Image 1 (cartoon, rainbow, N blue to C red):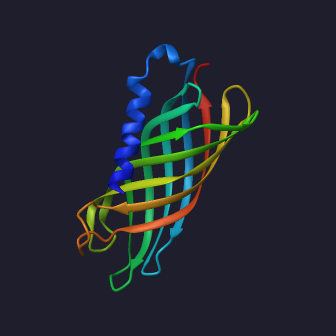
Image 2: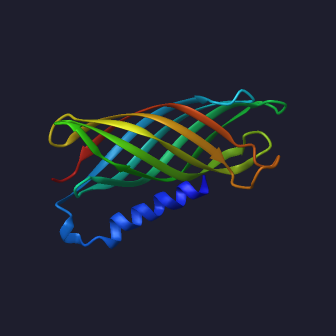
Length: 189
């Protein structure tokens, strides 16, 4: 997982800072709000997660448009890990999101996406864990351009949550898969 994070980060650096500005045809700022529901993917880690994401970012339109956003995720998770007690917790923390937008029709695009962040929980979560966790999400997004400024996003996501302390009882990580629905509002064109 760490290799994927490094590759994505290097990719974003290349697209953002190394290519000269004259290659960019347009920069569009926007805000995005989305919500998601993720269900467990492991039998022994039955934890469900709902999240609300509020992001601000830009889309740089080169040959293939690149999207980068930062913001905050508010999350609520509940459930249990086999042989540990059930608990629930609220969480909040900073997050980033990157997408590469691949047009498939005049107003529709497919975007592979990757996001990550660190969340602080209202209590140690999951049971046996810590008050913080890293949340990594990746998947695919269908973007519908509703008009010049508005866009609807629907994503299928895979999520991994872990406190990054390795494979031991103090790191009760869990995975989830689900759907994300979002709305983006352009700030300037």
